[in-house]
Image: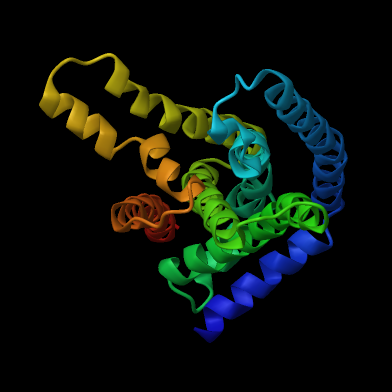
Length: 258
């Protein structure tokens, strides 16, 4: 555990004192500071329309569905591009700078290396998601909020980001080029959403059940509505374990080759 902590601390400090990470956080804050108030104004107009016409469904008049879920969707869209930028350097940069060989010869296992780097990526992603969480949280000053539903919804987004991080860490372990790692990671992040779309294009009940089970959107939908489902937790944990395991195998193979 101590060796994992050392690796985690090294990588976490690398994030904190990396100007690129601070720039990313600044850009996220700037974008959300423009998008979120616009979403609130649109929600206000919906309420006014409902008062005069009474035509909108009640769900759209709920701030969680009318504002927060749109906010979460926008954060998820940004994470598809941001998480690869955070993880692409974890292995690729080490290989490019020739410090990867030193890491392989150090008295740590491949699993400890992967876990330490993965946890540091999760910490950086958690900081980014926390920035996004501040906007709905500040809305509590002038609106009634169901805190538990909001926290569970953001927990679901964090789990999705954790899946991105595991996949993108695997991409970083495959190459010494940060650019190649980034492109591969973005493709992985986008592809994982298209897999679930098979539900809409197949007719067989058995095939639909399979696609529903592997659909990221299906498992996330329960979280964004404030419901924690065991199947969703198992699904996310399985994907995270799979790609972390693949990363560990790549590192171990590199160790044997060296």
